[in-house]
Image (cartoon, rainbow, N blue to C red; front, side, top):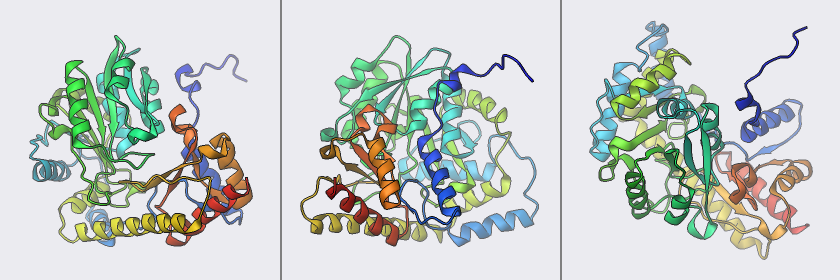
Length: 397
């Protein structure tokens, strides 16, 4: 028996991802025959569009199953660069400024490995997706949380960002459309944040994985397209949400060449390269004219579900639950502060009493306490039944 086992203390101080752990538990309960309405995950219930799957199959049949360029296959990097040029007028060199990654989480990991040294700080808004709060610690840095308020759509004020600065602050994180709040940052707000980052010589890790999931005319602002921002922006994106490709694990990092040259090493020593047939499918998703209408249809369905939840809420009558109307992404951040109970306890009771799985807002930070994150990336039936169950449970408390 091994004595005095030595483990990574940095990782030992972290908990497992609460959302992933909850999703695993729901799968276990469902496998055991228990009916659970799963409203906890950010995984679209739609299948990947068939033309994209066909493209992957063609690539496999053509022998695209071997090692390839560790930066990503050239056709995919060119397609990413062309998309950024077409949509935002941004010039990225596909040879030196784009790295294909194993999803957005891996892109974030590679970005942080490229710019952080041990003990450096990264400013992250609170509430925040747990990867942004924990990944700096994984790479021997620290996340400094910047508090926000629901009255400001969960965007920290510029004063809050300023107060959070430390002598070792290297970067800040912005995620719009936002997980967990579903809010979309205005261009004016991001311009102010850009000026703040420039004044303090900070990198901006801009997580834009929900960029195509927008409602009511809200617009996505590409951070790198703001004046003077490109050389400071580490753009993280993924095919997971837009194309319903969560299980494919494909994303990218677009950043200055000197950052990519370091991020490449982190990628080489963690994944070597992404499967080429997956990359071929991703390139097809970006370039084939048949795909955008399929994406638009998925977004339309999300909007219908959002509107269905809002209609149920309006018709239900007095309730201690308060809804915040999402502007993007596919989440409701439900205000349950009137129940005056910890959201971890509420989420557990909803699972036990109503067989509804939902994420307590407290896992996203102290400013998320009092809220529950509910996905609409589930079937129409589950979204409607699950939300009704939440309202019914809350009325009994």
